[in-house]
Length: 203
Image (cartoon, rainbow, N blue to C red; front, side):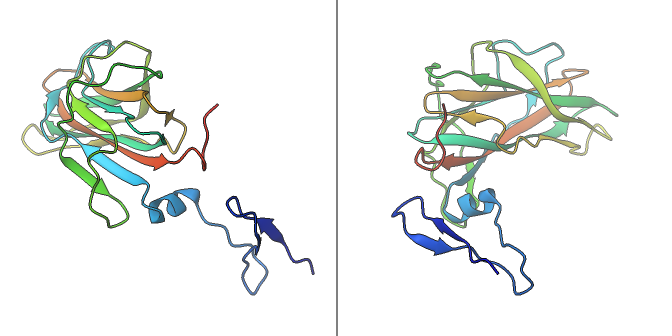
């Protein structure tokens, strides 16, 4: 029987790898670790904005700017339909803005949450609605949503990014809703991890 050890990233001490009595190696999703460390944040708009009926360009529904010295690992982007037409359809488009983007004009999103039971830190990330942004390349993400009626809040569309988008300091990400008609209105939001560079560096 082999006994495995690993070296800690900080301190460089030898530590044992954990396993079950039956011999299965115990591993933990890194996102669970980051949540336990207090790195997990959410923010969303409350006012519904009309969906575009063309490809997005220089207007976002919601923009997240990284104003920290950490890397934002995007976990999820979502849009909730509030007003629509019967069987109205919409989908999420995302645009990643490079390092050095213009800082959003405001930081007007007060609906924020920490997913580790702590009070939300509204200083982590600048989040603004209806922001004028550069067209750095928009792409559709996730599945589309379909509303059922015109009066009852309808579908939720989400892009399960799971870390395949990372926003380094002074960079940003924007979301826009594109639908079959501007009568489809949505509120958008982000879920991200604010991870120190010592734990996750970006080339």
